[in-house]
Length: 118
Image 1 (tube, rainbow, N blue to C red):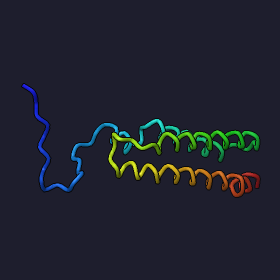
Image 2 (image 1 turned 90 degrees about the horizontal axis):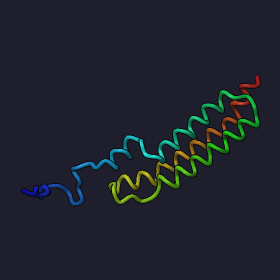
Image 3 (image 1 turned 90 degrees about the vertical axis):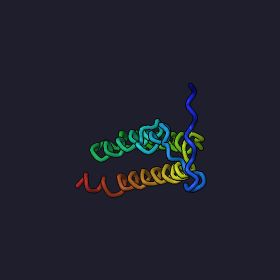
Image 4 (image 1 turned 30 degrees about the horizontal axis):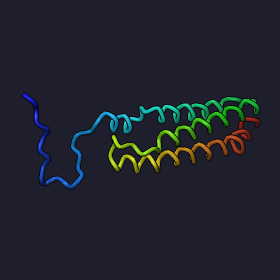
């Protein structure tokens, strides 16, 4: 006997989805490929704070920026498998992460290097 899909509650708001799919869950838990690229770029910033070699710092900074750009490209794509709200949040959060990375890189080369050399 074939199971029938559940009948939606007539009192719920239009478009309400009471069942979270696995793609939505992965987005919210931060375990998508784009999120792992953000984590790698963030690790690069931590390493920058510990390194005192300018050439190595520039290389790590460029790699972190490239990782974050690829993360924005992958993460900001519209995904039909997730809700409209999640897609909107993705389009806001990935550029915000990129701006945070740029601010941290700026601080590394202007403020933190002064503190490390003192």
